[in-house]
Each structure stands twice: as structure tokens, then as C-alpha cells.
Length: 295
Image (cartoon, rainbow, N blue to C red; front, side, top):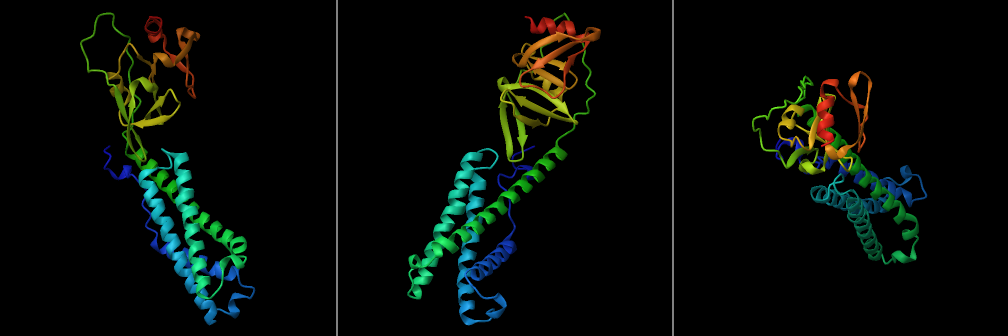
């Protein structure tokens, strides 16, 4: 898969102009009613209410658009998955703190137009925290949208990645020297919903197949999906470093913590990082494995 394919867009796409308008209208009404002591139906068409509602609506339209622009900007540069901590900090700064400051300044200007001082009212203790809560909820909405987008991207990735049929045949290594094969790779290209990334071979603990898909597991314990089958991968690995321990597993020598005898001449392998299933080397491969491991 190429980086330019639809499965690997660098940022989520939010086609939500209508939602932003509805959110601004709803938020404006809630804020206006929040500071009113009368039922909304009693002053719905009152001039003072309409002026206050209209002013609040303009501010809210600006704020939701500001949050939208900040989110899109951060999505393109600081992905939630790749730079989680930095993204959280920047989202709070640009998505909550900056809009909060803008709201406070605009509200202060609005009150000043009518000869009022914002610090003489309970705005900063009563209304402002409520507005910050609404702003935080809208940021949460974009986080949920991102997570949904990411799940859809991952689903698309899995559906379009070739399936390893799992019919690999393992044959014992021949004593005689094999003909020279492909040059071992130094990196493999793994795929994530946000892009294709190079994974150095020396950072790979093992390759494994599960549910028809082939994955890398690094020594740090992270998993990445590949588009090649285990047979194809095996051709480009250094046979002194990697061993085809089972039909669904190719292991790095450094990832093997121990091996132990099993029934019927099989050999069990202990891995680090661990694997969900016990890995058994067949009786046919057991001798070759021991010679490879004990070199």
C-alpha cells in the first residue's frame, strides 16, 4: 500500500459544518438561559433576549470554528496515536485555553459596550466555568470523531491487506550449502491507519500470523501489520538471526529466552516479549533448531 492511498490519510476529515452550526445555536441558547431566572418561553421574543442570544451566537460560532481549525491543524502535525502526550497538551492549550481566553475577552467587550465591567459581575465564577465545560465537551466530540475515523481506517487496512492463507510448508534445512538467495532486508515497511512506517529488522522480536494476517512484534512489545506472507518475509531474513519455528512464527534469536523438551520430540520456546500461544517446534525441525540456537 502506498502512503497516498485513501487508507493512509494523514488526518481525519470532519465534514461537520452543520453540526458546528447546531452546536453553536444550542450552546448559545443554553448559555443565555443559564444566566436567566425566567422560563425561556416567557422571553423568547423579547428584544433584550434576542440581542443577548444573537451576541452569544456570534461568539459561539467563532469559538466552535476556532476549535475545529485547531483540531485540524493538530491532526495534521501531532497525531493522537503517534504523539499522545504532546497532543493532549496542545489540544488543551489550543482547543480549550485559547478559546476560553477569546470568550472571556469578547464577553468583557460586550459588557463594556453597555457600560458594565465583567469583573463586577459573577461571570468569571458562574458563567465562565460553564462555558469552559461546553468547550471541553466540543473538544471531546472531535476526539470521538477521530477514534471512529481511526477504527474505520484500521478496518479498511485489514480488509485490503492480503491474507496469508496459512498453507506454508516447513522443510528441514539441508546439510549442503543452498544457492545464494535474496539479500536480507534491513527494514520492513509496516502499515498503520496513519501511514506506512519503516521498522528496522534488528528491532523485530518475531513475525507471526493470526486470523490470516501477518504482524511484526518488536522488542518493545508493539505490533504492526505487514502486507507480505511469512514465506515472502522468510526469503529476506538472515537465517543466522531468524528461524521459522512454526507455520505461524518466525523468531529472532535474541527473543528466545529458553527452549524446553515436549512430548513426541517437539521443542517448546519461551519468548520475550511473550506470545499468547505456546510455540512448538516440530520433531522434524527440533534438531535443526537446537543447532541454530546453540551455535
